[in-house]
Length: 613
Image (cartoon, rainbow, N blue to C red; front, side, top):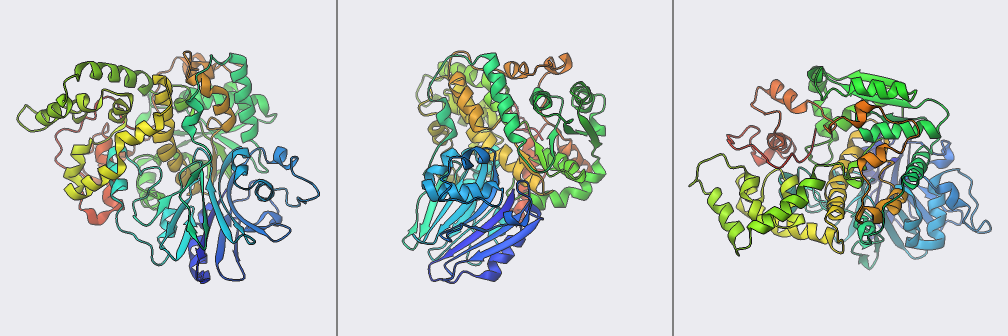
């Protein structure tokens, strides 16, 4: 796990000082070593900050050059099947000497080119310079666990693991990207392929680009996560599911340093710990957060987490986080937040606590809800789509109803989502947007103004974007799964997990977001009997406690909105993400003039919240 950056200059004038400055702005991502490499002609330069996890010696430092000198790689991530892949290489062509997955990836690219991306099990973002073809290859893993951002101005091309690092480069167009600003208020985060700045893009998950003297290619996809749900199949047998999850746990413990685990009171992390205890001989280390504000309430995860840890023999740490600690950390949180988001504070603190214990790798239960139907959206969205479709058979009825309800001519009290029910609720995609949205599209104009909102909505194309995700998927359940994975987990949960963990030089791994897990369960998710969270939770040999199996889903919560309200003396309702979004935006874009605490008498989102802090 590392921080990477690089530059390509057509006129052979890659700036060493700029590249090093960008690289070292990401020092926290890789405190163990730093490196740089420049082509003799000055066309290409790579920078690297290393967090040593596999192959700890200096031989694993980067950038890494192939033995024949043709290929140079700058790699971020972990490849869990690198040992198996190494056995497929021609020993007469490749001499492996570093014991790292980076070296294996470099050799695979030399043999297979871009096709190697589909062979890699793990998380990755990397760039490879082919000194013979004079071509730069830049790619990112299928599920977007690792970030990769890039900028071009016609002459120069730069890439980096962080948006804020790219902003240090000269000539970057930092004008607002309207679609990203609109998406932040719509969903509480940036779109999957955009940033808040017009000149900086995110490489889409499961894609690559090539850069050469002739220009930069459009992103070329080697896979999309929604493709796993295109073909419906029969149910997955419980024993097969168990073996698949055990295999993923084994893979995600591949490391030359100790691996910890985030433990809450939920089924996801409890299942992880239970299965981990089966594949590891030594006790698993687990970390749980506690908060005084949640004591003696259902949100207090520590009581049940302690019971889980004792059952599976874990070495368990429970750490309390206070309002005063948050007050001291708020600037660090906002600084570490590479792009504005309404989520991630929970990951920041559990990562902080884990790193304080001297741990460099931790496992997270992200992805289980999306794959195994754990969110209320799996029930609510199809039901809402059916109901609204039956009510909206008259052309124009939805828009007309919404305009009437929001015109001020009727009594106040109708939530924005209720007003948009007939306009958006008649399809899975529209109902999903209602379920996840913070602000409805017509509300955003009052925050960002008419011109930016109109431009952003047109470019973002919210419903069209969701329909492209669900294209070729038949079942409503599988459509919701694809939407939760592609429109929530990837652009929000995984992005937030990355910046929040790397702020503490901690590598975060996600055993449920795994290629082999998706391969095994995808057709079942698209079938008539999709696997459930209960099925997942029944896979351990030693059953989960009844307190976990019977516990209602609460989410992984942090009382951050209450803390913000108390520290700033503002009216910030604990149930409202809308005001929290305004707070984040006002800090990230201070020149916007967006009020932290507007006189908004209608703060109810309706149909469930968009995310849980």
